[in-house]
Image 1 (cartoon, rainbow, N blue to C red):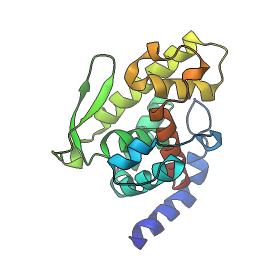
Image 2: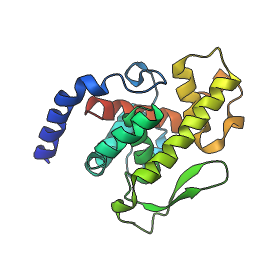
Image 3: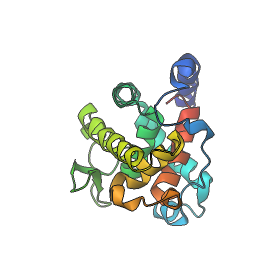
Length: 197
């Protein structure tokens, strides 16, 4: 495990300037978030919640996500979305591919369907799958921008994350920008950002 952390440290140093200002939708390093709800932590065996739980879950999933860093960067550049956000969504939805069963259109967006009893190989995660997920996020962010043109880029990102699964109808005001999905994803993304994603 120490070799993994050494590799991540080297990647962080070599890519710091490249990865420090990714994305068109705010700077995730400066965003405040309460992190995961207690229910999210409990589902993965933690007896705590908040940022600490989000970071622990991100840490657990990181060995799987490291192999996808080149694809995450490619997709991030294509959609102008920080790769750390994409990694955090993948971590949140499928434990970095450890419980990936199906990726596909689910009515109002692309979802990774989870089934705790079935484990699919992580090789199922492809650039195409990550592009589909990221495109949905990008569309949701743009919908929020059109609906609330006076908001900040940070609010657009939060709104896009909250609307990611539920659709734009979920966002009616700035009061709706603190959903559990968004709070957890942002905390995980901040963690991944510190390790070079």
